[in-house]
Image (cartoon, rainbow, N blue to C red; front, top):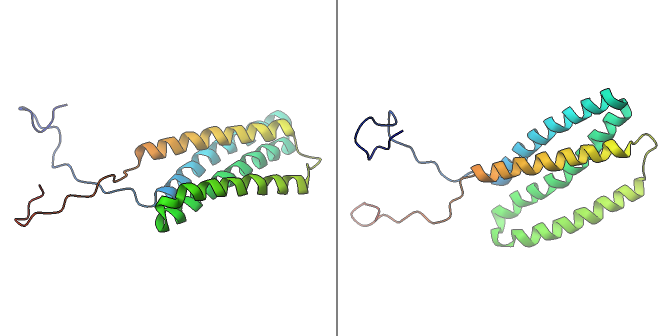
Length: 161
Protein backbone atom coordinates (compact mmCIF):
# COMPACT_ATOMS: atom_id res chain seq x y z
CA UNK A 1 0.00 0.00 0.00
CA UNK A 2 1.32 3.43 -0.84
CA UNK A 3 0.32 6.79 0.49
CA UNK A 4 -0.87 9.57 -1.74
CA UNK A 5 2.41 11.40 -1.02
CA UNK A 6 4.58 8.71 -2.62
CA UNK A 7 5.05 8.35 -6.38
CA UNK A 8 3.30 5.48 -8.08
CA UNK A 9 -0.17 4.02 -7.77
CA UNK A 10 -2.50 5.88 -5.44
CA UNK A 11 -3.89 3.81 -2.61
CA UNK A 12 -7.50 4.95 -2.85
CA UNK A 13 -10.02 6.13 -5.40
CA UNK A 14 -10.77 9.40 -3.68
CA UNK A 15 -9.81 11.72 -0.89
CA UNK A 16 -9.98 10.47 2.67
CA UNK A 17 -12.91 11.97 4.51
CA UNK A 18 -12.86 13.37 7.99
CA UNK A 19 -14.88 11.71 10.70
CA UNK A 20 -15.95 13.61 13.76
CA UNK A 21 -15.97 12.48 17.37
CA UNK A 22 -18.07 9.48 18.42
CA UNK A 23 -21.57 10.58 19.29
CA UNK A 24 -22.98 9.22 22.54
CA UNK A 25 -19.94 7.17 23.54
CA UNK A 26 -21.56 5.66 26.63
CA UNK A 27 -24.70 4.48 24.86
CA UNK A 28 -22.55 3.05 22.06
CA UNK A 29 -20.53 1.12 24.64
CA UNK A 30 -23.75 -0.05 26.27
CA UNK A 31 -25.03 -1.35 22.94
CA UNK A 32 -21.79 -3.13 21.99
CA UNK A 33 -21.23 -4.61 25.45
CA UNK A 34 -24.84 -5.73 25.85
CA UNK A 35 -24.90 -7.48 22.50
CA UNK A 36 -21.58 -9.28 22.99
CA UNK A 37 -22.20 -10.25 26.62
CA UNK A 38 -25.80 -11.22 25.85
CA UNK A 39 -24.73 -13.54 23.05
CA UNK A 40 -22.01 -15.15 25.21
CA UNK A 41 -24.43 -15.50 28.12
CA UNK A 42 -27.02 -17.11 25.87
CA UNK A 43 -24.43 -19.65 24.75
CA UNK A 44 -23.48 -20.29 28.39
CA UNK A 45 -27.14 -20.77 29.26
CA UNK A 46 -27.63 -23.23 26.41
CA UNK A 47 -24.54 -25.15 27.49
CA UNK A 48 -25.79 -25.19 31.11
CA UNK A 49 -29.15 -26.50 29.91
CA UNK A 50 -27.57 -29.43 28.07
CA UNK A 51 -25.16 -30.18 30.93
CA UNK A 52 -27.48 -29.89 33.93
CA UNK A 53 -31.01 -28.84 32.96
CA UNK A 54 -33.36 -25.90 33.04
CA UNK A 55 -32.57 -24.69 36.57
CA UNK A 56 -28.86 -24.51 35.80
CA UNK A 57 -29.53 -22.60 32.61
CA UNK A 58 -31.74 -20.13 34.48
CA UNK A 59 -29.06 -19.81 37.16
CA UNK A 60 -26.44 -18.92 34.55
CA UNK A 61 -28.77 -16.42 32.91
CA UNK A 62 -29.63 -14.84 36.26
CA UNK A 63 -25.97 -14.51 37.28
CA UNK A 64 -25.01 -12.95 33.97
CA UNK A 65 -28.12 -10.78 33.91
CA UNK A 66 -27.29 -9.27 37.29
CA UNK A 67 -23.76 -8.46 36.14
CA UNK A 68 -25.08 -6.88 32.94
CA UNK A 69 -27.51 -4.68 34.88
CA UNK A 70 -24.70 -3.74 37.28
CA UNK A 71 -22.46 -2.60 34.40
CA UNK A 72 -25.27 -1.02 32.37
CA UNK A 73 -26.20 1.34 35.20
CA UNK A 74 -22.69 2.84 35.08
CA UNK A 75 -22.84 3.43 31.34
CA UNK A 76 -26.26 5.08 31.57
CA UNK A 77 -25.01 7.33 34.40
CA UNK A 78 -21.93 8.11 32.30
CA UNK A 79 -24.15 9.07 29.38
CA UNK A 80 -26.16 11.60 31.37
CA UNK A 81 -23.29 12.88 33.53
CA UNK A 82 -20.95 13.17 30.56
CA UNK A 83 -23.32 15.52 28.77
CA UNK A 84 -24.17 17.78 31.69
CA UNK A 85 -21.01 17.66 33.84
CA UNK A 86 -18.05 15.93 32.17
CA UNK A 87 -15.56 16.94 34.86
CA UNK A 88 -17.76 15.52 37.64
CA UNK A 89 -18.39 12.22 35.90
CA UNK A 90 -15.63 10.32 37.74
CA UNK A 91 -17.02 11.32 41.14
CA UNK A 92 -20.46 10.28 40.02
CA UNK A 93 -19.07 6.93 38.82
CA UNK A 94 -17.58 6.32 42.27
CA UNK A 95 -20.81 7.24 44.04
CA UNK A 96 -22.83 5.11 41.65
CA UNK A 97 -20.50 2.16 42.17
CA UNK A 98 -20.90 2.37 45.94
CA UNK A 99 -24.69 2.64 45.66
CA UNK A 100 -24.78 -0.33 43.26
CA UNK A 101 -22.66 -2.57 45.48
CA UNK A 102 -24.67 -1.76 48.61
CA UNK A 103 -27.98 -1.88 46.73
CA UNK A 104 -27.31 -5.22 45.05
CA UNK A 105 -26.09 -6.68 48.36
CA UNK A 106 -29.24 -5.56 50.14
CA UNK A 107 -31.47 -6.94 47.40
CA UNK A 108 -29.64 -10.27 47.24
CA UNK A 109 -29.65 -10.69 51.03
CA UNK A 110 -33.31 -9.62 51.29
CA UNK A 111 -34.46 -12.03 48.59
CA UNK A 112 -32.23 -14.85 49.72
CA UNK A 113 -31.11 -17.75 47.60
CA UNK A 114 -33.92 -19.54 45.79
CA UNK A 115 -33.98 -23.33 46.15
CA UNK A 116 -33.68 -23.86 42.41
CA UNK A 117 -30.54 -21.69 42.04
CA UNK A 118 -27.42 -23.61 41.05
CA UNK A 119 -24.53 -21.63 42.55
CA UNK A 120 -21.89 -23.01 40.20
CA UNK A 121 -23.74 -22.05 37.03
CA UNK A 122 -24.73 -18.71 38.58
CA UNK A 123 -21.01 -17.93 38.95
CA UNK A 124 -20.25 -19.25 35.44
CA UNK A 125 -22.88 -16.92 33.97
CA UNK A 126 -21.52 -13.99 35.95
CA UNK A 127 -17.91 -14.66 34.90
CA UNK A 128 -18.85 -15.11 31.23
CA UNK A 129 -20.67 -11.79 31.34
CA UNK A 130 -17.86 -9.93 33.14
CA UNK A 131 -15.19 -11.14 30.73
CA UNK A 132 -17.14 -10.54 27.52
CA UNK A 133 -18.59 -7.21 28.72
CA UNK A 134 -15.16 -5.89 29.62
CA UNK A 135 -13.64 -7.12 26.35
CA UNK A 136 -16.43 -5.41 24.40
CA UNK A 137 -15.93 -2.18 26.35
CA UNK A 138 -12.20 -2.23 25.64
CA UNK A 139 -12.94 -2.76 21.96
CA UNK A 140 -15.53 0.03 22.02
CA UNK A 141 -13.15 2.46 23.67
CA UNK A 142 -10.37 1.53 21.25
CA UNK A 143 -12.53 2.35 18.25
CA UNK A 144 -14.02 5.55 19.69
CA UNK A 145 -13.16 8.83 18.06
CA UNK A 146 -12.55 11.24 20.92
CA UNK A 147 -11.71 14.82 20.08
CA UNK A 148 -8.89 15.83 22.39
CA UNK A 149 -7.97 19.20 20.92
CA UNK A 150 -10.21 21.95 19.59
CA UNK A 151 -10.29 22.41 15.85
CA UNK A 152 -8.08 25.30 14.76
CA UNK A 153 -9.89 28.55 14.20
CA UNK A 154 -9.79 29.71 10.59
CA UNK A 155 -7.58 32.72 9.96
CA UNK A 156 -8.84 35.90 8.36
CA UNK A 157 -7.80 34.70 4.90
CA UNK A 158 -9.91 31.52 5.31
CA UNK A 159 -7.06 29.04 5.76
CA UNK A 160 -6.46 26.90 8.82
CA UNK A 161 -3.00 27.59 10.19
